[in-house]
Length: 142
Image (cartoon, rainbow, N blue to C red; front, top):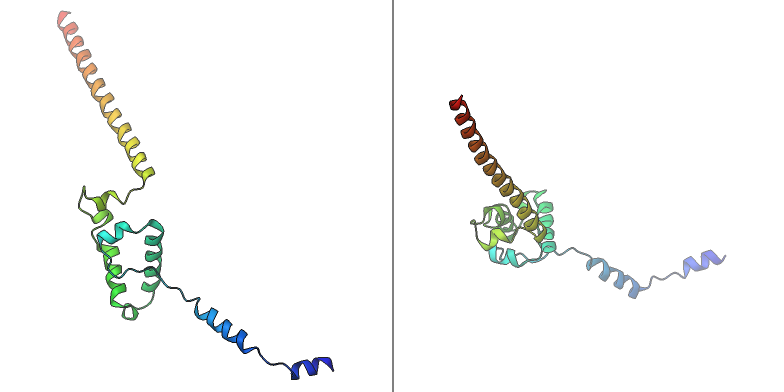
């Protein structure tokens, strides 16, 4: 008896329904702004924003390109072929901004080890040449 009267008297709370619809519409993903993407604006973005833009555009590229807006297509083209990172002019700020601090330190250590190996090999070559000259003098003396 109680269950049937509760079902008969059930009236949905319109305020609750409106609130739920408002919350569900607010959960639409909105990517970061990338309207005017060029090498200057790309450098100023932080790493997380860059990754988010790249992930969003990768997701958009899984569908047909005709479904993408022209600004998304321009952004994809810039990220893929723009003058930043490996395609930047060597020695430019865009080329240097690609490396993180740890990467710069590791590259410095690696370069130092390589140049030390070159210096040691040059010293060994000089000492080998002197040794060979001394051996040639000894052979001539015999």
